Amino acid sequence: MAGASTPEGSEPTWHDSLLGYCGGSEARRAQAEDMMARLAQRAGIALDYHVKTQWQPVESQRVLLWSAKQGLAEKYMSALARKHFEERTSASHRATVVAAAVEAGMDKNEVERFLDTDELRKEVWESYRTTIDEKGIHAIPLFVFNLAGVTDGGPFRSKGARAAHWEVQGSGNPQEFAAVFEEITRKAEKK
Image 1 (cartoon, helix red, strand yellow):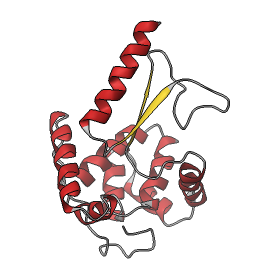
Image 2 (spheres, helix red, strand yellow):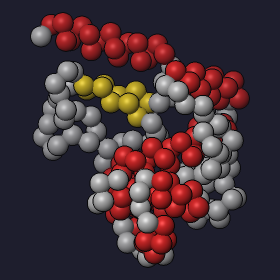
Image 3 (cartoon, rainbow, N blue to C red):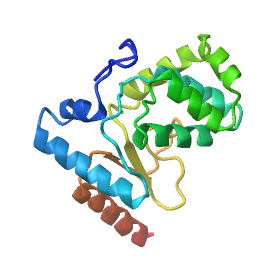
Image 4 (tube, rainbow, N blue to C red):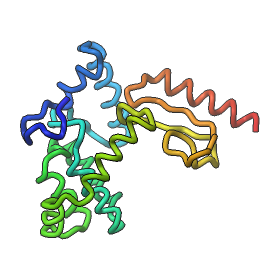
């Protein structure tokens, strides 16, 4: 998997990177891609595994933090995700980041000026560090499930919060998800 220092356009595809994530097993990669594609299709998303990708899309994360200050984070991420996963334009590439920001309602020249600075760069790297070192998250997506009414569970809970929660990696198989849902149902019925 390519890192933040990999030159734009030289990154491997998501398909290539998944092979390493799946322990070098082409069969496991094919199974993971098939399962994710079927789930995405049910949500109306047509995944494309041949988009260029990298572990640390710092510029897209900087714009995410910046867009949140403007109340546009959801719109930005929706546009960026569609461009990356469906249109094969990498979320790691500046042109894609800028296009998604503009689609979300930001001014193109302001986005370009922002990206020419180092603003929020330290915050993004610190977020990567704490996600791995403090929260123990090494892969995405990570699904966190709580009981109804619990909004403070999972690895990002408030300090001292002890709410029951369940975590499943996005590459989890249907049986893993089913087991979590069954356990949550049993616990909810006991209440």
